[in-house]
Length: 80
Image (cartoon, rainbow, N blue to C red):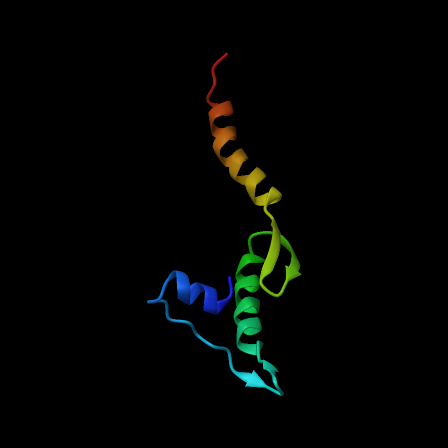
């Protein structure tokens, strides 16, 4: 949503403007913060950048490990 539209919908909103460099919005702060987030998320699984602020995170392996931690003890305790 554009800022002017957001202001109409929610007049009390506080909009923050990015600094401008060479006539364009300077997104370096935004990119740096995104990189920090990705570095944290990447500890949980494989990832792929989709855009400046989107990441696909493959949690298959951590999810399988979590399932086995739950299922295996139950399976071992079943008496025949």
